[in-house]
Length: 352
Image (tube, rainbow, N blue to C red):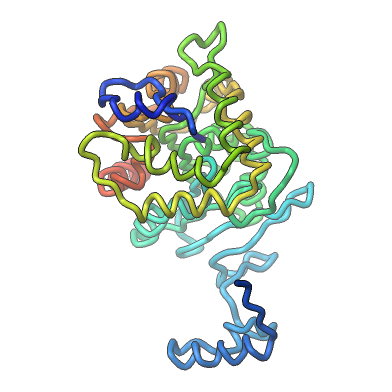
């Protein structure tokens, strides 16, 4: 999810102590099968990979999942009740404790690369899926809601028969985790712990009951910017407030910017457009109140996307069994920019 600054001038001049939003967005090559197999043979010679596997020979062994949860799987798809196909990654020993990661808007499971590799190396089973309409999942034109996001996450968990799971969600993914744990994970006895990182609950929208929220006009601006020029909008977000690259002295990474843009543009514009309403207008107060499993709440105090005082601080108050940690100066995308700090904290919570 993203709550972006309100104007470029304010964004450039903002300081780390100002947590108010400050910005408003402003040749085909055809190959037949013979060509493909020939190219695959050359690649196989260089990489020692069977040419049949690269060319897509139906008889080749692959790492894809089977409907029965074959242990060889490393990725696959789950078909939901409405026919939407949800892509997931599943790495690591299948008998190890699973950690399930839930990404933010408008990204994909790839946003968790730093965490997936870290926890995989520690011996955990790591799972991350692309939300409907995002990444490699079906570009669903309906049901782009927090309710459905949680149901889709449950479909992945049940398909893989995951138990004793630690669910970690970032931004909109944090809202997905809260709804999933409250509605599915706890009742089914499948969840062990939860982590909310710069997450959207309890409510982003400014209302009479949530005076610290963001006005509806800001989210309308997001919709206008996405519809007018989604590609430029996503570049502006990634190169500015998401990672704090608009701050004086920030160390800007073009690779991070381009990877954010790549993930956003992989998804469907319609699902991402409708997702703005989902992440901004869904009240998850009751979800937080009903969660009883140990929950870690993490956020940076220079988050320009989700103001921490109306997010992490309130989450910790509403949760029954929470641990809160606020990182001075960290941005919304701190899981990427400060993975060397965040990952050990996540590990300590998982093992503790």
